[in-house]
Image 1 (cartoon, rainbow, N blue to C red):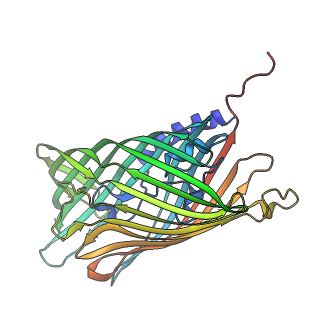
Image 2 (image 1 turned 90 degrees about the vertical axis):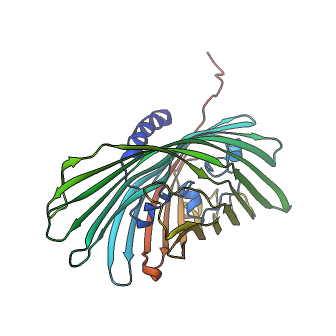
Image 3 (image 1 turned 30 degrees about the vertical axis):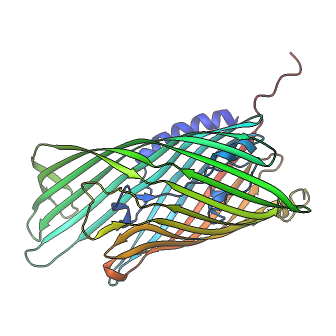
Length: 415
């Protein structure tokens, strides 16, 4: 059954990944877009903490975790995001529904293999700048993003120590459409930019756990992403366009395409986390992520008032299960999760660093008679600021994910 679900979901996500608008943030104009959370909804509900060597849930943040899987695991998740955007004088609302990840984990003795597809970054904005008199008005639209297809292997050196590595093929397309016009004149200039991105990057990881007191264990995780390069093939087209009240453009005069190629630098990143807890009962963990300042601005979005700094993220979270084996009470078998994260995104606009912070909670709902579960998450956060002429985003995310488990590769006892 799970094999049919995997094939159908892979085809679905392959199509949706290219078509969906994964964000409504105006900050997605910069760099390669709004970078998405890399992880399952189980992890996201705990503020991003993924430190335990779990046997039935996939950990997409550290490939060493694949070695701990005991059952074939299929993970799929999506999110509905509602955002209130405001400046010092105006406000607007936006909503998006996205598929967030599709992954499969295979246990192979001391080895574990994981593969899947993840939207890595998203571009999705519609901005209109109106002026008075004879000054130019501007309209900015952007769509697309970057995706990751990954393949990872984990190996359990001892019962407590695992190592792993994965390779990611990055691919995607970003399209921006800028239109300038003068009030009451139904003609203007349209600039269309199409950017094809591709590249490969590698991650290595380690996970270690040890018992420190009776049933209480210490968990730790270390993950390092090597510096990589994204190849960017850019096509710019400038044309004269007519428009109506709905800003539908009719192109009347097109200049020849301008094609260029650039190499964007994705800096190295490391993430370290630690926690204490009792397996299948409770866990509390903390984490820290650091990434150097990259060179991700392209020819179409490089601005004098924009710069990039080091990215840093701090998170804390955990879970609690009242009684994992309480067959008479479903509520006691539910996993209750919570967490908090604070993030310096690395983007600086008008000398103002853009920060993102959120509180999250979630519930892991077991499917009776199986090791599978449905995971529901809620996240409430704020990104940006109204200072320095910028935009503040207040968002609420409702996520649902499936972690389905089945035993494969069982040797037949009877022919």
